[in-house]
Length: 289
Image 1: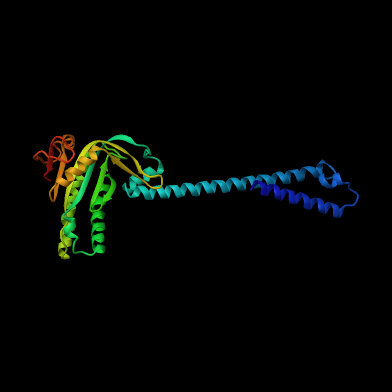
Image 2: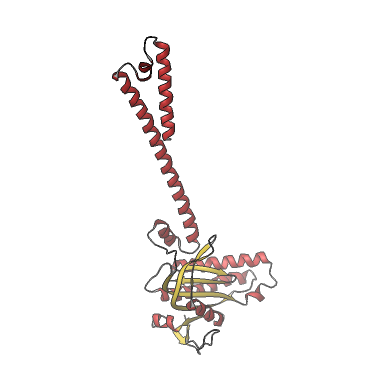
């Protein structure tokens, strides 16, 4: 745009010179180029400056508009990405910068919950794939609404299982308690969900839930082309083992989660769990709500 302004000024100058040539026959070449005196030179200089200023301002405006459009595109992409993980309010905080999500791995204390459908393979054996997918989407819709209500983060879907985190990227002092409240609400919501399924002559969905609290490494995981926010570590593996051991409609929590929520929920100690990859049995508890 600056060049356009200078070009317009040059065109103006040339046209002005040509006009002076046709209208005057007694001026020499110097006078035709710059005018016979300062009184005519300065207006031309001022006009040229105005053209240059106009071009500069136009270029600045276009650059700012491009920056604003690029920022808007980035915000939309960020919002869409985090709305899949976080509640809408928290996703908006990430977009606005009020909540910072580290791109590198960070050590955090988090509570991890796995929810898995019991007997999913046999339940879906004689059901069309489209109906199975619809069932899972309706089921996950209920679960995610509850998770977001308790400000948890959806880490990933693993077929008929879902992994949820409290403590990354958003942490609260009562994250373990939030996870148990969410698990209890999920179990209650599933009762109403199953009543509708039975009324439609469909099979009930039974779930097992495992919850563990401990140290994790949180951050973006994946390739340079596609990455997602997640947590890794033994805490995650143990939560998965607890979920696998849970019976239908049972919520099993680890000893660490129990210690941080002791007295808040009615629980009963179960037989120590011998989990795969663990040298010693795990002390576990059943949430009786």
